[in-house]
View 1 (cartoon, rainbow, N blue to C red):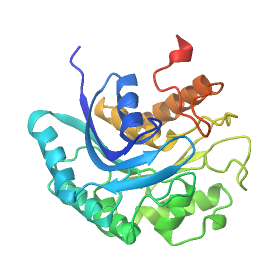
View 2: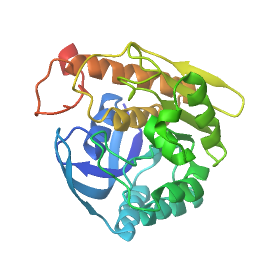
View 3: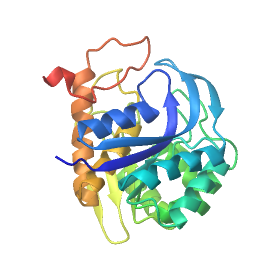
View 4: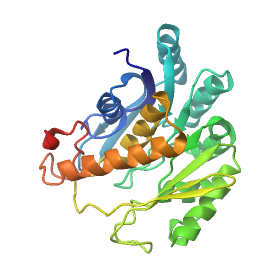
Amino acid sequence: MQPVTALTIAGSDSGGGAGIQADLRTFSAFRVHGTSAITAITAQNTVGVFSVWNCEPALVTAQVNAVLEDFEVAAVKTGMLAQPATVEAVADLARNGVLANLVVDPVLVSTSGHSLMSEGGVVAYREALLPFATIVTPNLREAALLCGLDVREITDLDDMVRVGRAILTYGPSFVLVKGGHFAEGSITQRSAPDVLVTASDIVLFDAERIETVNDHGTGCSLSAAIAAGLGLGRSIPEATRDAKSFVLAALEGAASWKLGQGRGPIDHLGWNGE
């Protein structure tokens, strides 16, 4: 077998549950060779993010170019870009047509509430990077920020479609608005709906909510799984469906784990299914 190659441009999670670490494990689960460009180094664990050191944008670009010069990269995903200058550096690469099947996960704030993007990041995403994205995968809080809304204004599926269409105006081909963060929200407490929006279509991906504290890195893993699927030649709806199924199985597999004192990682590699 000749594996395809995917690239993640994201931050490092010292706790191993999210970021580059989650992306590479997800690529491996899909039998895709993973390469990486690190944008930031975080001091974090299952409890929270304690410190962040940003890489210079020139170093991020150098990492990406080193990979692209040696590998045929079939898909690219971005995660935590940390600062507007890095968003713009990645946008420059995309503008040059070298980031195939670009999946943008607009990481702006951690689940624990720690800001993962410096001031001006939302504007940089909207004006510089989103026009080059094949698909953007914001959670509800990120979708609200990108649209200049309070997340409490997103109360049902119609609102998810509305913000998805608003994000489409910034230029991506597809927007996947993720509803999983409404554990006690106004959409539903029993399911985790994601809505895929295009200019002409809406596709709902729903699943029963898994009751677990081990959900750290689900957003990173979902976008990495979509990138892996695109690299393998699947369509956006197919890649999204498979990514949703992958994350659901990984949540189920890790539901009883006790790794760390907070929100633990998911079972990327299917260890509990072996």
